[in-house]
Amino acid sequence: MKTISVGAFEAKTHFSQLLTEVEKGAEVRITRHGKPVAIMRREDGARVDAARDALARLAVNRTDMTREEISSLIESGRER
Image (cartoon, rainbow, N blue to C red; front, side):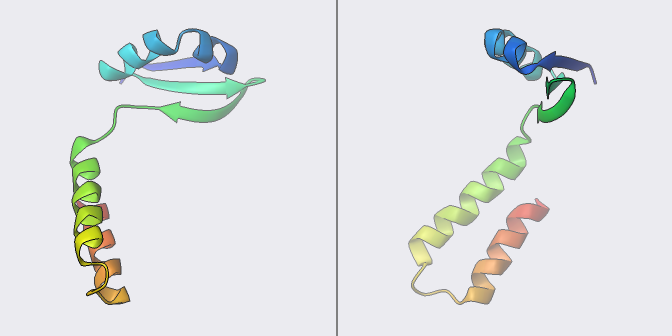
C-alpha cells in the first residue's frame, strides 16, 4: 500500500487529489507541525453496510428491543 504524508495545509489545499489517491488504495497521513494527527484510507464497504443495516433495524424496532439485543446488533456489525 502506498503511503502519502502531507501537512494539514497541503491536505486542505489538495484534498480532492488526495481523495483520488485514497480511492486508488493509498493511505494519506496528515500531520500538523510534523506530528501525525489523522489518516485517510479507503473505507471498507462491508463494515459500513453492516453498521447501516444494524442502525436501520434499531430505528424500526427501537421500542421493542432490550439493551442486550441492541448491543448484540452493534457487535455483529463490528464483526462483519
